[in-house]
View 1: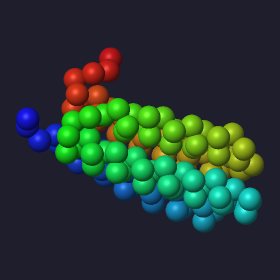
View 2: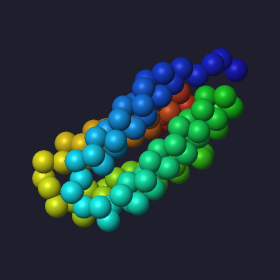
View 3: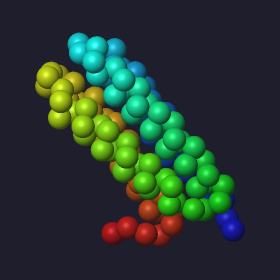
Length: 111
């Protein structure tokens, strides 16, 4: 089996980690911190699933982890009181989409 090039997907996750740190630093609601920490854990799990996928070409855990991360971001966004943070949420979602598209290209799936 040829190695799968997922450099763009890993870079997108690196950028999303930075986006989450920025988002948390600008959040004025301390009660959201645990939810952002859960999202951070989900992004870490997504990275581990991406590493497994790169090693053994099995996207199943990765796709469910991406879906969970997306749901957590959307949940945080819906409860956000500051429209100025909308671009930060969009950056995270776009990064998750980059990972998904990279996996689809690697597996030959998708539209």
